[in-house]
Image 1 (cartoon, rainbow, N blue to C red):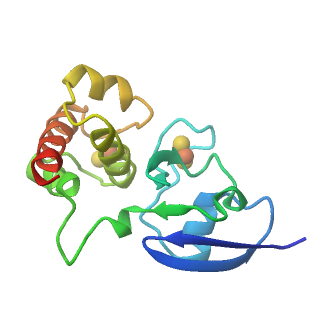
Image 2: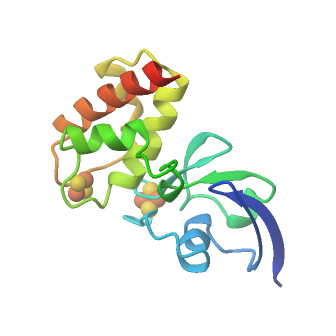
Length: 158
Ligand code: FES
Ligand code: FES
């Protein structure tokens, strides 16, 4: 049985017909072709699928697309505004906070939601709050620097 859902994705209204069991991550990648959101596991551990749902960072492999009905979803593709990188994206670039780039969209979405919620982030908070996002390449050192720099830039621009 197909369901009809209406939601906002990266600021644009989207109406779609979906199967009830479709995961939000599959909807974003396969139906909307927003392939920046990645799938790195099947146990909700890696965080590569992190997006914002009504401003909160969530793992889009862990909810159904139907649960996002009526809500606002932002993916990594929606972070650039007027051709300018979001400050958290710019900080990852500046601090070399990515290598293969597979974890990066999820990292940026988690980090930007965290910084929006706690503007005066400490390294300890970042380590604790971002433990739902795994990276196989970086050893986390430069990600840490990037998140703290991005948080400062977001605060300065707020
Ligand atoms: S794909 Fe790994 S947590 Fe979602
Ligand atoms: S940059 Fe490769 S997994 Fe994080």
